[in-house]
Image (cartoon, rainbow, N blue to C red; front, side, top):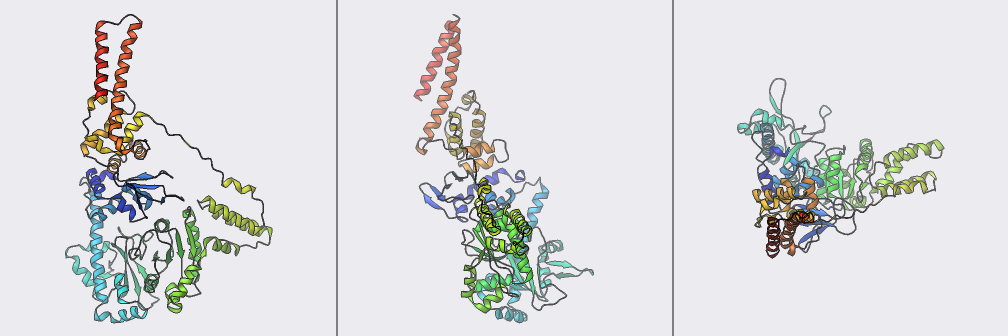
Length: 578
């Protein structure tokens, strides 16, 4: 896929992106010497071993060995595809991706997406403006009755689709065609060919991504009508995918390293809780919590608190969410649940009880483990052997989905206690792990390659490449390839160098050497680099001398051989002096 984007643009994008600022926007970084340090976001650790190098524009964890450039970080941290990473960085740097025109299809797709974002922004403006018109006074009063102040509904860009909206949207089609408007999911065409607004007569909730771009809309009827659903969302489009969308994400003051996230069902739940200054509240547009939602949320926090409506559907959704979440409970990742009284939702309960009581509910939210066993226990009579057996197997089948072995162990222990098993021996195996410590192999060629990978600016030195190419060493072709690439592309940092080799056979070799500990201090990098090259060349000359000297054993050493040896030794002296 990266072949469809010019390599030079990707390198330019990386040169504009400061990896320290990018990572700092997602996790806490503290300056330590020349580097920035943090606890690794990819594994559990007590002391920080995650390093971000501003000069090389790369990151590395000495604990789990995760490393790479800005694109690698977005791929691992946010779960983006390569193209999504480029789009993310282009948005951050306010640049347009110049897809190669020979790949017309991809070029066209990107253009369509950009056009959709522009249209959604214009349509949202129309909806929001309509909410403040005289003909929308009933809607405005309804919103205010729900305790939502102007400052809050402006923050969330609330709008209204009235009788004039369809025509207003069609009026902006001077710059767009009918198909563009249909592609937004807002405009539909009925059987008679008449165009109409899908969200007509509904309160509008723009759904924004973390950068504030509008992906879609939610709409709510003011009066409940059994003929039509109370809430509707945008259909699936090129920019709106319900299983990935999170409502309220953009409105969070802080988007990472949150103490917790509260997940609710509805738009008004998010807005009203925000009005009561309950922070870190989002909605996943209903109750279906997907793996995409979970990955995104667990990147933002270690603790997710689910607070669904207090009806039958809400209880059912809580259990399904727990099951879906089990494979994502790594290390310090936790789930908690708030169960509301029957027929209450977060909006209604905070209006009745107030902020203080709701905060108490957050504090008393129950951990997954408590809810887990309570729920399964309801299905089985554990006073009988058969009930215990079924309770055990149902529990085990779910516990085994959890990747965290320590968490598994304590759940197993709790499970045994509930069914009366006291022997621990059968559970010791889950702890047993063989830690194999491999010794690092040091060689001059490894050190040489690591030096050029970690310090691409060394290509500026006056190097005799034809002379180096004659050195017969396994790593020389790789070394020369890197030097020539750096010279040709004028590469000065490791992050861009790694990107230049992405999808090539030696990419992982370079990635490995980008953080390989070569034991060379930064002050001695240049000197060591030249000394190794000289040493390898001297070694080559000495092999030649040795080969000539072998003739002496057979009394075949001629005068020209002696002159050759003298000449080669002279070369060695010249190299040592240089």
